Length: 566
Image (cartoon, rainbow, N blue to C red; front, side):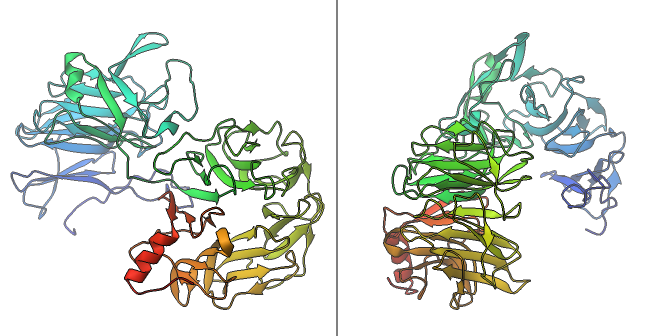
């Protein structure tokens, strides 16, 4: 509104050119008083953090006597008792915060009281909530205590005294007022067994949002950097009991999937996922544990051997080792003993059709090959660093790569590559390609961008020596294959964006989603299931892995008279 006097001035990093940390944080929160025309506003200005209007926003004043020097992460009003609570930190977070305070304002008298639970804790404060059924009770979370754990503080006397969610018994032991059930998300330990006082799973981190149910004093929800936790017996805290915390994120999905494979034996689906590594999906109704040995925080690429599908390789971002190989379909893994010099990221990885050779195009290092499961690596010749690599599904000696609009092929297990004569391929945008199972030298490539004008779907039957662009596909981002010759693409066909299936080698395409089933960016990966006709798996950026069956999408489309079986 035009009458507000201060848009804020705090910029986390003025030198950040990405825009992620160089924007003014502006207005941080707005808290109205439901009983009158008063509104409180928190501002990202360390010297002027709080403003108030008593005429529904027509005019504003800087609240007198307010604390300065920190940012007001949260402001919560107890309109019954007449108190405003502030949680402040020295940074905008959510990844950092070294100091902060908690304050209470008597809105009737204008008196301020500093009620910081631990003034010397080495953290700021963020998540803040009051119990609407008993408004003398409030809770606040640290911002941010990465190690050994986040801390929740609880007060039943408006902040005069506090108790902690956990306390030290004597270094390094600690006593928790809670237990945590992660059976709904068993990967929340990140495969770690930390030394005390750190524990797995953690109580939380990045706990910016904490809320006591206004209708139920026992019900609490809070967000972390990984999930939503909750409890239904919060008030047992005050009587010295144990608060039972569990995952409350069923039906909420935020994972960014980078790659998918569906081998012809073993688990039907394996995923490569940022932040939580990825999974061998043995049960589509329940989450599993993330990949281990090595635990790669963000898996970027997966592949299986076309003729020996129990051999699976994966690579990803994080600390070394960033490569793992399995010979039992992902049940167990062995980390690479070494990495090519200079590796900084996972890049893409491919395993030969018989499982004997691996080609890895990691971030920060040359494309390299290994014939011993990653014990040793040798730089490949003739292919540029940063290329995307894939393997032929039939010929163990053949590997392929693409970079900058040039297609490369290897006939000696990835030791040497040569640029093929193929022309007209996209040099910009996201480019992904796959080799067709069962036919040596059959390659499909999707990608490009609208800016360059080179954006679509291409097909090669001669190992990439030449490609033909499919004229009936306007744009394509990813391609995959299923049982019975099914080809799946995430694409634009006849001017319509969607997920499409072809059962006749791309001559005709059927849209298998509709306008009510959209998934934002779906260009990272798509694959059919080689054992279930018509089943498809789709990678999304923030909505996890989705699956659909032939019966599901044909029923939906036929009910809308939008398509029929090809």
